[in-house]
Length: 437
Image 1 (cartoon, rainbow, N blue to C red):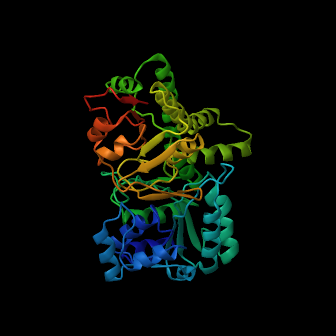
Image 2: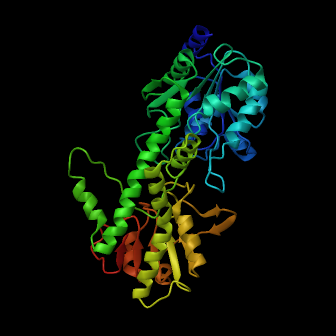
Image 3: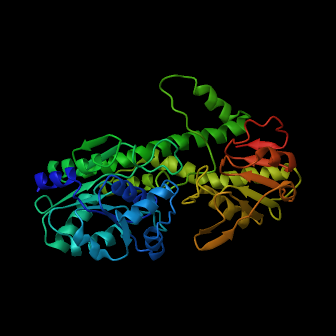
């Protein structure tokens, strides 16, 4: 089976299936098709399926022309019928893995997708899970579900591996194609075959590890590392505010050290799919072994507290202007979780707005990338534009995303007061009405 699959990869005879056409799945499907592999994408949302089949792009990291051309040429198509699995040789599972209402891993999408895949799984198929999850998912959940549902045996009839997604929306340098990949399979043969498939598509290095569990833990390490360091910086920011010290200036000074230091920055909280969620996956799994990840849990507590802290700071700023938070008009600038993208998953700005409104503030938002959002069932429409007159109508302008296509100089000239949680106004010379986190 190994030699047969390696030969099919070399000859571009593998038919690829991608389960989930979101921020991870669609760019991966496009790259597979661009590399010469016929690709079929699957999604439960018919709207996404229809858009792909019409060559209409909805993901920022995908080039519109690439998608359109691949669909026209027949190299890429989409479906919402799971039976397509019987026709493919390689399956990448790229479905959401959020937290539930109790902040515990919700892997129902992974589980349900695997059950459906098993119904149609053919011999000599490679299955790779890319969705971020806790260590052990591939071997403890995916493997038995595939074997029981298909009647096939892992390692003999099909290969199974984990290769964590590494997607950074809006990154101008690293995309799916040139970002290094980590692959860990159930058995050495599975690892080699899955790695060969990625090498046939991607420009980045492919690093092989000894098991899916190592690859799963590696992904958790990447983002927990960032969570902990951001948590430390956020905590020091709160201390520096009490001490009358600019944490932003402290970081700039620390950055001059050429070794042993990497800069992390404070903000209103953590957003995106991975950094705010991955530590919860690890701490949840650790409890199975009677182990408490105290440092990780502490950083999570600090980062989760930042939206409340920012609202508290906003209240103090308004108080100095003899205004109560209750009844004040506040404009929040930016609801995307990072600059210059239209992704608001887990964005701390949404939590900031919710808390402000709970405190009685009258809140609007403006984001040049996002016209409206839906947060826990609450829909909110943003302003379509901002100008001098609009800015003057608010008691406080609160910057929560550092978009580069916003005229901050105009805002500074017309705002009563600005609370900048991202230090995006750092180059403005007139700072008399600006307070930075």
